[in-house]
Length: 188
Image (tube, rainbow, N blue to C red; front, side, top):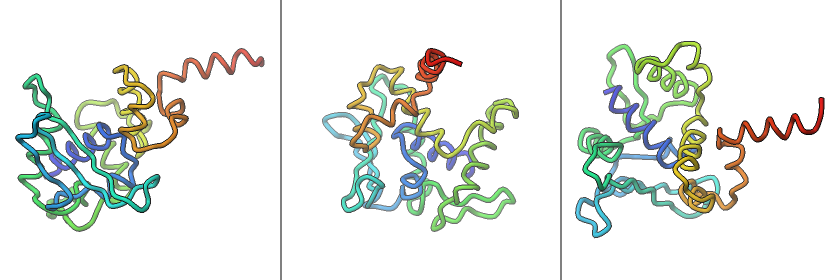
C-alpha cells in the first residue's frame, strides 16, 4: 500500500538522516531487516546496508528504537511494514493506477521526489510549499531536528554515518539566520 510505503520510506530517511542512495538500499528481507523485540536496551528494528557513500567496503547497521514512553511512532510503522511486505525494497516502486507495487524495483530519484511531494499534499501541505522539498529534504530535516533536539555534532555525525561534521552547518536549516548575518556583515 502507498501509505505504508511512504510512511516507512520517509520516516526511515528522516530518522536515520539517510541519503537517497542509502534509502534505496534498505530492504525488508531477512538478513537486511530484523526485529529485536526483547533486547535489554529495549525493542528495535535493524536494517543492514551492504555499502554506503562514506563506508564503501563494509556494511552498516541502521537501528530504529521503539519509543520508551509507550507512544506509537516510526518503529511501529516499520514493524507493520516488515510484517506486511516481508521482502523487497522499503522504497519500492509504487504505482498510482492500482498496479501492485514492485518489491524488486526501488523508486527512481525523480519519481521519489514526486512521491514525496504527493504525500506532503495528501497530509495538508500547501501546493506552493511542496516544491521546496526534494530528495535531500529527509536528511536535512533529520539533521535540523537532531540539532534542535540538542544532539551534539558528534552524535549527529554518528547517526548519519559521516566522518565530518562540516556538512551539518549546511543541512541544519537553523543556521540560515547565521549565514545571512555573516553575509550582511561582509557588506553590500
